[in-house]
Length: 115
Length: 116
Image (cartoon, rainbow over all chains, first blue to last red; front, side, top):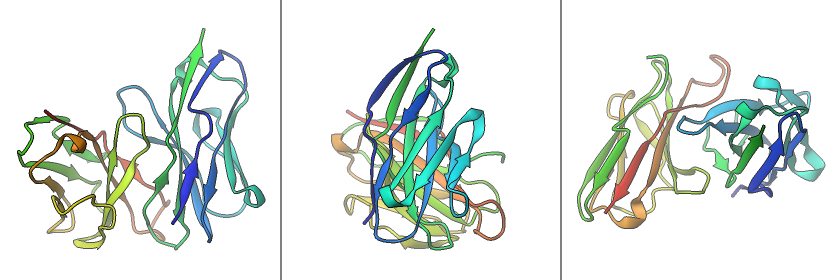
């Protein structure tokens, strides 16, 4: 069974600071990797995903993530955060089966960006 | 519709009451998933449908939980004899058949169930 670990539970940053949120997964096979964001009162939205190919993935709103297979990691980065990035961020993994399959989520990281 | 629609948005149930939560996926999405999100946690998988077939129900926490998707579109998650530990947000997600478009999952806004 797969599992996902997000080490940072609550991160507070000032606007314009750089962001890196850690995500490590455990699974014995090939995986698809995702980062979702949940703004207060809103539904989960996809930030970016990795299926194959270039391990550096660029997503929406200036976010990117790098898949490092040897470290089983998929850390999320943003060079300069904005107040509007305040939200909960979830890393998720699914087996790469070539079809839709269940996601396993981490417990989430709450990001608070101060002005 | 444009997104995954879930109803009701909020449900308060008395302990022991049965509840039914509805998910209306994006038209044409063959895969449908239900997740349970407890407060302060990430979503946890409950069950998965491909069209009307329930292919995986390994995440359903007890036999009080039952899901169906009889015509391969709308799905209902039913919880019988609700307990306080059932209080959570129930999320629905749908997906196209992979290979027919950009793979990925679209989530609904969820139903927040509070059992009192």
